[in-house]
Image (cartoon, rainbow, N blue to C red):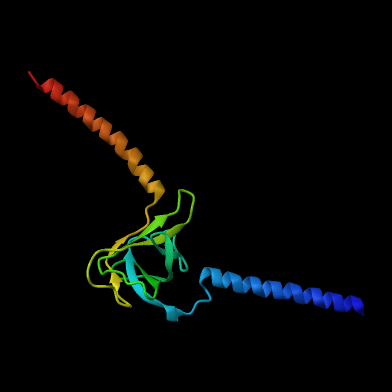
Length: 166
């Protein structure tokens, strides 16, 4: 009988540890926070590659919100992102928002760059100045393709100008 009591106690401790871990994880990710301490802003991106619902929104490297929804606008074919920003953070109306990378191998996040306008964004307002994610592969392909084409045309131009002069 004492063996069963010990098993029940150990099981209770394991269960309590599991509940504590779940509560800690919810708190750390911002899942447990109520929506009462944030306000929504909307931004349209050409590409939201690399981000998803729950992605951090940062200002000066500090987390100030999260992405709460991503939807495709059927008229513009842009991705509309709804952002929950901490109340008390007053962003100028000409603020910009862009998708950034922590490093070449790191994760993506959304960065807010505040503007200098005298007015502030209100809940539900749209941030107009946006920059979507940039694909590293497409940048490399443009670089490789641009270098080959640029050197051929410049050498051809030099050869033409050299032969055409008296």
